[in-house]
Image 1 (cartoon, rainbow, N blue to C red):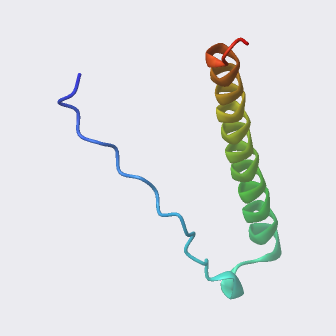
Image 2: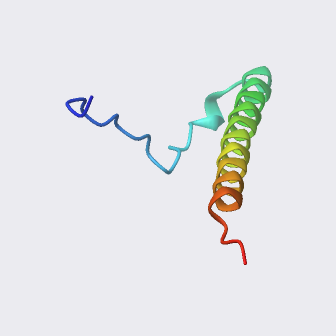
Length: 63
């Protein structure tokens, strides 16, 4: 269980793509891929926020 090596994290910065050489349809597809990745990241943030709120509610002191 603890013998697993940590997974490598993705770079926090995206490397800029060479957009000048791409066709318009490739650029539009790239934008859609980026939007999908943004939505996936926002879902992960929302899930963590929900988990945090649930934990805070569970461990809240009752006065």
